[in-house]
View 1: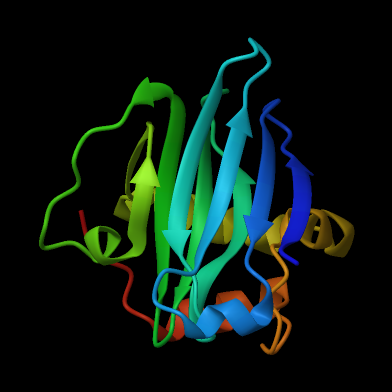
View 2 (view 1 turned 135 degrees about the vertical axis):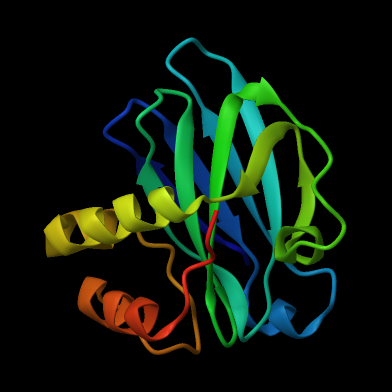
Length: 162
């Protein structure tokens, strides 16, 4: 039975997250599906690779009402993706981490810029534990992240330059 969670963001987006059951994570086709609903009624879909070591862990609202950020644990590092459900999908560069992670999308998705990484880090520092719990995507068989543990790991990781 998959795990399902609805996440309402402060910019008005609702993200309906469906994660595979933990035992499905061992199969290469396992993925987390995010259905994005905008206030206008328009919907978008994104599907990202999920396994025991890799997967999306947290979503934050973007400054644009149709956009949000998805923090992804890529085993040895975090990736940050900006997803804009108001724009159509465009192919991602074949030499990017996103190319290896993205299954399907009908939304515009790209890796975050240097400045967006720092915006997200600033937001994480201000995030209350209740907001963090509400916007976190539970991962079975994993250590539970906190805003502080994510920030500590991000500080030891090189944030990609623009």
